[in-house]
Image (cartoon, rainbow, N blue to C red; front, side, top):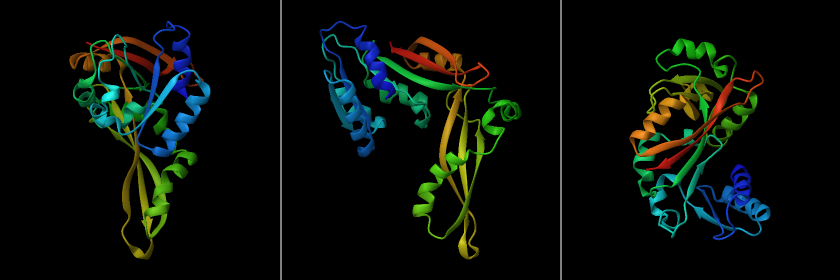
Length: 238
């Protein structure tokens, strides 16, 4: 929905010819169908195409990478999707090596509350560590365990801090499930999700080194106190 809203804004600012195209990429067939239905309804005059695939394998999808005349591509990872990358530096350097000079990449990030070399300050200032994992998050994350972990009696969630992230200045939050088992079996441990916080200037410096120049960094507040906690960032391939 965010990408479709962005496309609406682009349409009002771009010339009518050539008509932009919207490609939707998702590894989930069900989500891809839902996204296509929404985009087609909201953008009836736009060519919307779907690619059932994994963005880690982007170079395989030639329709998304081959030069198309004077067209410029805008790749988006909105909805905090960047945190799904195990190594952001390798993704921009290697996977996105298929992009052409001048292509754009748009993403949103969560902003770090402290430096990863000060873990005690992170735990003191990051709101995620100041309360337990939300019940809604626990219910959602426990779904696969309740369906597939045989012998599970109960499950508890907690956050663990990861300060060994690829991008300098960033740190991760891992959602860890501790599963209590029936029959006296030992507890089991699962990593069920993760997120990351970034220091925008260091992210800019890091991606500059692998060929992506920052065009925009727009911090904004997502909380009631008005303090910037997120940022929209756009990069251009050199």
